[in-house]
Amino acid sequence: MTIVSAVAHPNIAFIKYWGNRDDALRLPANGSISMNLAGLETRTTVEFDPQRAEDEFTLQGVLQEGAPARRVSDHLNLLRNKAGLAWKARIVSANNFPTGAGIASSASAFAALTAAAAAALGLKLSERELSILARRGSGSACRSVPDGFVEWTSANRDEESFARSFAAPDYWALADLIAILDDNPKKIGSAEGNRLARNSPLQAARVADTPRRLDLCRRAILARDFPALASIIEEDTRLMHAVMLTSSPALLYLEPDTLRLMRLIPRWRDQGLPVAYTIDAGPNVHCLCPQDSAAEVERRLRETPGVLNILHARPGAGAEVIPAQAGD
Ligand code: PMV
Image (cartoon, rainbow, N blue to C red; front, side, top):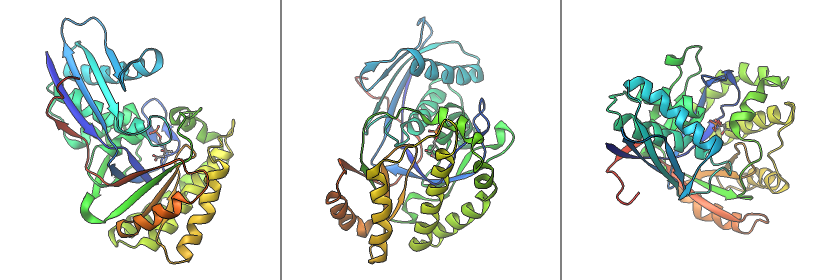
């Protein structure tokens, strides 16, 4: 019996992944850039037992059945096949942030699951191999494997599409204040949404323009140039939501309270407060700012109608194996 725990953070994409060139392998249509979010985390313990008949997956203390349990078992099968072992496992996972509310819980979930299961099966994998396997569970999970500021390259082959770090977490003291406007699980998850992207007439143009946006974003981060970062991440968010709005069926994740912040935040910037928005597949608004502006951004968010809660994150490390969690 082997038991291993791992921790991983979700990540926020500055240049978004939306749409696959291969849905089964989760090979993305375009490259993406993200920052891991310390302060938010998934802790997962995997215990393989040769005597066990079935996998058993518990999330936030609740035994999972149906699709979520199958997705975890399917992912473990990839790792079991690599190890040449058929052992079933008990998997216990917990997030310290709301699950399924557009905060990419699947990214930290599959990064932590991959790191824990690989170690428990005795697989000695490089960061690149772990990132590739995490990608198979949930695309954006590959970006939660390396540290800090990360780029995921799009490629036609499984073994070439992975994420790597281009700046350490302490390279730039940014904060992400996540304005929670609605904490209910979203109706259409990103896996299904990703399949719809290709039927938007705007997707091809968005994908073709990605190298330009990746370049601007990478340079803005490496130069710690906040105005440049603000401009490119907001543009990229609007482009992704334009694709979502024009796929069929249309995906409308933006709520009136989301649009209010999309108007207010550039106005706050014009008034001299460095802050920028980015929004994933949900209504909540990630407000990026230098850490020394976070208190003022938070004060303004608290005064804004519709903001139910604010989560705090800063640049974080990659997925890590940790001492097995007692009592899991
Ligand atoms: O990896 P998924 O299936 O959770 O898709 C993530 C998609 C976005 O969060 C909307 C964008 C991104 O790059 O993280």
